Image (cartoon, rainbow, N blue to C red):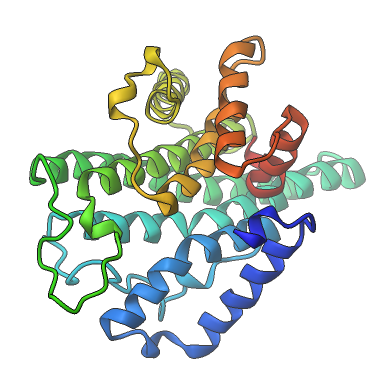
Length: 312
């Protein structure tokens, strides 16, 4: 909390960057026991965030780190909240490299055309870069769609109510963790999945505006618009506490979940129509409640630009 409330806007970034280097320096082989895996799991979000901010590849997507099962048994057929969380992290850690490469492509396209004109070799090179990136992003889009279907299967396995004392031993400390709140946790994961999907959709739409050979079906651009609006509305319905947004279903669990809402709120804010001032004000109000400080449109736009960059 001290890092969040610190007036030095770089304090949190420097802190997370240091922790990220510490996790990396230990190496993937050091994360085997339940405690070690829980430690890695707790750091995956911040590690991915620092990669987004610095526009670098996330080391969690490297072969030796990829697919470490922090929250489930490692069984690919397992249907559980834990595997759902791991799958989301494995997809999320690809986003920093995608946005980095998108930025490099768009900047390179602009500067090269300006300097070299419209030579055939340059046109072919840029088209190949665009097609390679678009194919990777389309795969991410379909993988996230599959994960949405997986979450729909997981929810059918969950109990209606959770007894947070279930499985506790007499001497075990009483600390509410994600496994105690499976429905809230799954909902938290689905919000983040939807937020990542919106960013991927924005990236695809930007790439479709660029010249290249890879072209999805003619109706695909319209599908992306419809999907983006659907996901945005789901995020607003899930995160805004208001009578019009089913307040009885707004419990996101303990503080560690509520603080994580800022990612999905910021993504939703980026795709709310500019003339919908009422909804935009409600999102800013929720950010104020989460962080106990005033939030302006300029601050939200700056933070989104710093993390999501070229896809907006």
